[in-house]
Amino acid sequence: MKTPLLLCIAFLSVLSLKAQFGPEQLISLDHENASIAIPHDLDNDGFVDIISGAFGGKIVWHRNLDGNGTFGNEQLITSGAIALEDMQLADFDGDTDMDIIYRTNLDKVAWLENEDGMGGFGTEKLIVQNEYPYNIRVGDLDGDGDIDVLAVHNSNSFQEQLVWYENMDGAGTFSAEKFIALDTFNRFGITVNDLDEDGDKDIIAATWDLAPSKIKLYKNDGNGNFETVETLYEFDSLISDSYKINDLIVTDINNDGTKDFLITTDHDEALNYVGWLRGVEGSLTFNDPVRAYVYNDPLYLYHMEHMDLDNDGDQDLLLGFATATNYGNFSYLINGGSGNYSNPVIASEDIERTSHVTGADIDNDNDIDAIVCSSFGQRLAWYPNNGNLLNINESAKNTSILYPNPTHNNVYFNTSETITSVRITTISGKVVKTVERPSFITISELSKGMYFFTLTSDTGKISVEKIIKE
Image (cartoon, rainbow, N blue to C red; front, top):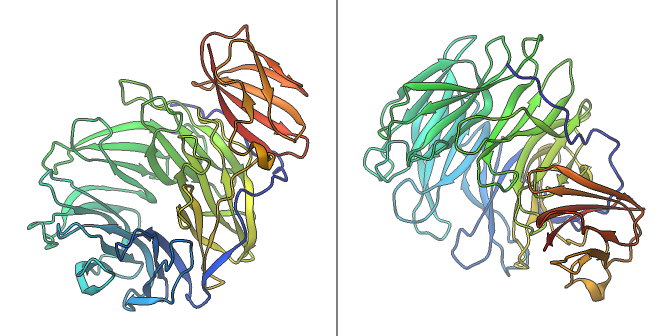
């Protein structure tokens, strides 16, 4: 049993940072209860289009007409996905284009074949019906080279079944369900990943059975048998449902080459948080959670995505929130490279319940733009990534904020902002030096290697830069 550490807390008041994203670029105002958006070049013209689904039953796509984010009118794929809650892309029939799988909160999991590779889809093909599915994930679970489907669906009032459906012919003909486990699986806390790096896809799932939440590994024997179960982490709490995991993602947060867990949690009597558990190299051991962002009512986290927003090679976070009054925001946290996240930056508060947020390079300028669904606003929009978190002078945009790099001794600033504080950390996250209101920084006493400089300006703007000490 372990006690969560309150490290790297961003529960402090949100700094008034300049948003990295530009103003809203509207795609559609006629998407009733818009619930999810997926960026993908659907018509193979080299531009990122957007496929979106809504609780009202429509799945549509919008073509990126010019590669600059000018989108055409919606093109209907289906209107039969009533009460749609999740949608993903996968190539189920082996023809190299992406098909659509979706789940409703009523009774079914189904897929739609991409028939021409140009955005033309066939009719619905059922995988399972009348099972009240809670979750779906896709991956090659039996190692035969095609894409299978993992699902969680209701079993009784207290438990759910974890099952999978085999793609029997590589063309999207699915078997009856294959039972894996009966447990209290959290709604979205499940993923497919080769966690033990033995060449097959394992299942990692968060469970909660009126006891502290656990993260479990269902090991794949290579043929789709998951009989070996191992508890990787168990939360320590006297309150039975404290730190219940809502979402679970496997990724390398601190760029050390070892897989970590990125999680979101909630609790009806305690603070909620976004955090991560550092994986220990060469083992299936995970450290106590580091809390990247702690929040409470009136915010409710609807969706989280991890992607490199500032082009520095690590995983930042996009967050979509709603409130009890149905308003919300989308925000982001910048990763310092070792899992030290900035305070949250509110990119937009003019959203009626942010139901989904994701990102892609919409305007072909080599950075990640944000795509946001608003369920109450029936709104689908994107926001251009403008970069320049510290307001670097136009003449200095192609140069580093810090120079020289690499350096033996002193580090200087190339920004018009007044730097009020600098925190220097190693790649493992250890703080080795802090400096208040520096005109320059001396690092001659530090050992050779890579360091992360977290800079805060007098207006509260934050940037994280890498420096090589020679």
